[in-house]
Length: 519
Image (tube, rainbow, N blue to C red; front, top):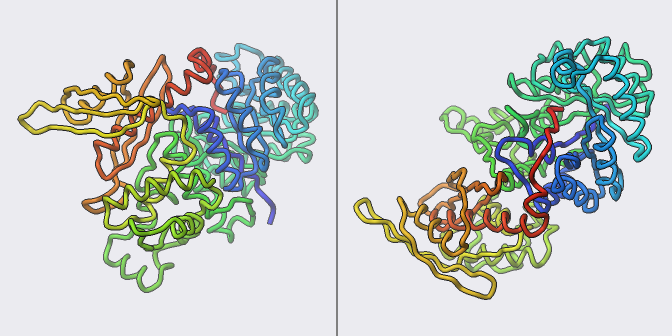
């Protein structure tokens, strides 16, 4: 069984999804979880895009030591120098440089002749090679490129020192059979290809990203580029969890192995969903809420008799909580800590555990029992938090179908407690107006969503909000058995992120972002 590298680009291509904006701390937290997951390469960002992206790549390079840390760079000297600086402290640094090779991109976007593109590719790789030993070269829009020209560009890149060549389906145009033929063609017609790893990077515009990636593996690809939950530009990228579990479940068809710790998949999916503010659709393969749910009577009967009748993989294989262990307000710290270890959170600091325990006791006072999904929601809210400039102390809402809705909030601001009241079109609107009075900020609410974490009348409600400030989006998430309280917490978390961003890198650092392309 040959080894297939898993290249995760959630922090780069995934963050290019509309509406997603991660700060430095959030990127580091995701990167640490990707390390636990066992990915081989983390593409941490596009350093030339903005000061914020540069700082995030540099922070990930310092904090994560297992996987290769890659930085994206166009085939431009200034991009490559910035990428080299960003990954300079990584234990295993990589520069990933790219240029478009399709006729449509060369003519209309680059406005360059093929010979010029060939020279730029060679020069970019040669320059990157001066700073790092590990250089990846991508031919943007490879699947709409002339195959012979593609082989020429790859040969030049390998000659200049590229150790990985990437054949991206940038616009999700190809099909599995066609993509496999292209991979084989490149292998057979590119001089020096035996000195480089062939990588693939598929987008999901036609819903074929995972199928195309798997077809490429059968054709000899040694690296697959993907994202958690399939995040990415437009319709997204190939989903890491789907590729990995397909390779594992159908090892009879794919005699390959990866280094992924599959039991960390569910935890990683949830963390990315929380920090990006993008919910996972219920019927999403592998990590969706319904992936291991059975409602039809014949299915339920079959599963009760023998799980494999309707489940081709087990929930435990992806780290999905199955246990029905009941934790309540009388559970002590020892039992709580032990349960966290069993759930894969044994690496939390004492401070993080204590914060989570306080939230757990608060929730247990409101619910008869606390499920593992409740615990996951608590952990996602409490660990790796940004500084809390504003903290909700209490709130009170008066509402009715014929009454004017009013809300009163008491909010901690440093050592000071501030109280304000406001009216609104509904309870959430009134609470948000009251919070705005406390902060004195003009906040544009771009999105609001509510979902139940568990079932029952005392279900934990999870609210996600997005706010915009000076063109930048900030996501906040709040959980509570009271959806109004959850809404307030989510709104305040988004505001705290905004203020933290202003305080650390300034507004100008996150503006003027450059297009990283769809590599």
